[in-house]
Structures are given as C-alpha cells and as structure tokens.
Amino acid sequence: MVANVFARSALRSRVASRQVMRSDLYHFSNSNGQNIPFDTKNRAALAVKMTLYLGLGFGAPFIAAAWQFHKAG
Image (cartoon, rainbow, N blue to C red):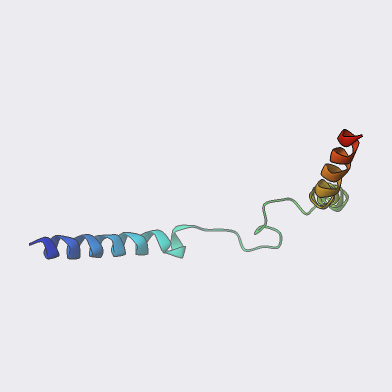
C-alpha cells in the first residue's frame, strides 16, 4: 500500500515537472537584442552604464583598501 502511494506521487511529480519545463508554454520574440535584459539601441548610454558598472565592480576592492589605509592614518 505504501509503495503504491510513493509510486503515484513520483509519477505525479514527473508529469508536473514535464509540464513546467515545456518550452512551448512561453513565447519570446526571436530578434536581435531581445534576449538580454537591457536596451542596446542607445550605444552611448550603454557604454556609460557598462563602464560604470564594470569599473565600480573592479575598483571596489581598491577603494576599500584605500579607505582602510585612510582610516588607519
């Protein structure tokens, strides 16, 4: 009896996961630039945003080290 219940729940979860993973449930337009979460039309603004984002991420350890040296006096 218990094995029967586990077998049914396993089948139900397998069917449910297949329905969730089906790719035809969602439709995305297949055109250039639509598969990324930011706009690439304005290239100057994109360059500024990427420079700030990547520059701050790269510079954060150096800024933190400089702040620690500054606090130490």
